Length: 362
Image (cartoon, rainbow, N blue to C red):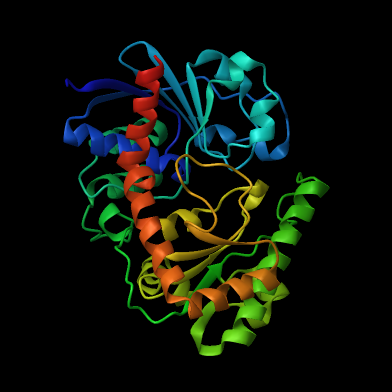
């Protein structure tokens, strides 16, 4: 089969869409597709003027496939759809895919909105000249462009750490001691004066849920648990007893720590989003404890198969104890997540699946 022509219409170098950029770069290298790109100049426009959507365009990417099929990728945290983008594309792949939102659309629109999948930041292991050109186009000769060049060209991380594919995946370690990890951020509800009360309350609820989970796990599991809030002024003021040392939360150190913990906890993110940590846990083949997911993802990802679901901190603790004691269940979850990563989450798999659906429907 000849390489599929794919032209990216980019407008940002956002971490939200790095997984897509990496997937397209890897498939270009393998010969599955032939990649080209140009900068998109028009902004993404939402019908809503909600504050959390003001800069949401950074999480969007357009792709023209075979010169005729226009795909739109939306990796923003929130459930809202950019309906003007939906009107202009053949298929709209949505990270935060909510059935009630999609089912409220007219049938013709509804059929074109598909779940994209779990999201996380991962860079390729190979030089990415496409990324270097995007950086230069987006930010000109600037410090930001220099950072973009380092990400694109410094594949051995000599000038700073970046999460490259080879270090963002691992096979199941089925013999690891059954210890539990939950390192997480606390969100300041009041750091944006324009934030409405609903979103303020959302952040407070997320913080309190995470804090309660940390306290219960810490008290009940003792040395089998490692976790807490990453250092910030807000976390230190509100949860001083739960803040971990700064050096333990750098991404390089966090990934080293993650490698030795078979059981990992994930909670809901902002706007009900599925957090990036969940995708990282899947990529590292972990036995996962996850708060009930709000949004759907493709494939066979499900409670009991890929994770143990909880709806309260108390259920989180019960699930942790269950995974510590039940070796067979723990190992089964780890193996299921290794398979899901291979088939659906790895950047080239995620992009290949979207392109395959587009070509089949086009």
